[in-house]
Length: 375
Ligand code: KG4
Ligand code: ZN
Image (cartoon, rainbow, N blue to C red; front, side, top):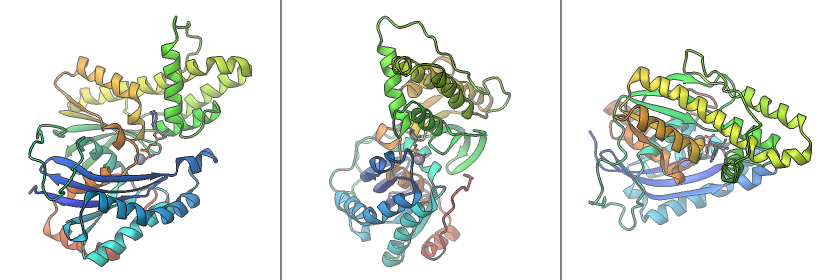
């Protein structure tokens, strides 16, 4: 049964402290508030996320962030139907801050509590509509276009984040089958490591995308000198491998002078990005051919990559014109709590009485896990 529910969601799995209030109604998800306190500048100094530093910042920020989310949504604890929190996978010291906060609130306010898989959140970011609820959270706007942002099943999700690269088949809401995944580095991890090699800073994805854009804008376009492999392009499965690409970049970097490196950075970034995109699109297209999904979703932090969004969209439009294609709005691409609330709504609105009773007791039992796979 689908009905309107108000969810308070919390996300602290990595380096963003985030809380959101989302309202689900049928298949539609609106965001009443989505507060994200980013620690990126803090970790940039170390070239990556330092778990204990992240946890310390989460502890500092979590209460103000939750209070702000409630204040902006203009709701009190009575209005909340369910609390949701990312409890897996992620950095354990970071996850514990979010789960402890959520458990405390669930106990205090006597609310059901759902633990959400972080990647499930990224998938459901695709269902969030752009318009935030402005005034009265209890009144769902009537002018919503119900055909918007709906997942039709079977659906296929291409997950590309800092920790995951997977192709996931969904035969229904909250039902996942991983049909392909990376054998080594995740796509985002490859972007981050390559950016470090090129001294571009952290997080690497947006920095590489920016350099690549400089190359695209060069007039006249220089004749490409750099060529990187497309790893596992011809393998018969839906798996990926990105660690070799990083090594290919290292080989180029070691061979050229600092002056030439400076000049060639935009081209290196362009070719690296295109190599990642080519493999992602090739394997996704192969999976579309086999599983015939009605909807294809792009999910995870790397979905913020404009070229990937565009090129995958073009491929689907040309080769699979009857398949619908969803990408999250940019603000919901990278880690945020609204996406956790969206995933929780689809679980909560379909929950059976046994699991509902368990959710009421979840403040006692909910656990965290660093590596658990989505199922
Ligand atoms: O999903 P996310 O925010 O965190 C994890 O769950 O891991 O993803 C972060 C990853 C980082 O590796 C970051 O470099 C990458 O997403 N990323 C991008 C872009 N924006 C963020 N990668 C490529 N292009 C982008 N524009
Ligand atoms: Zn993420």
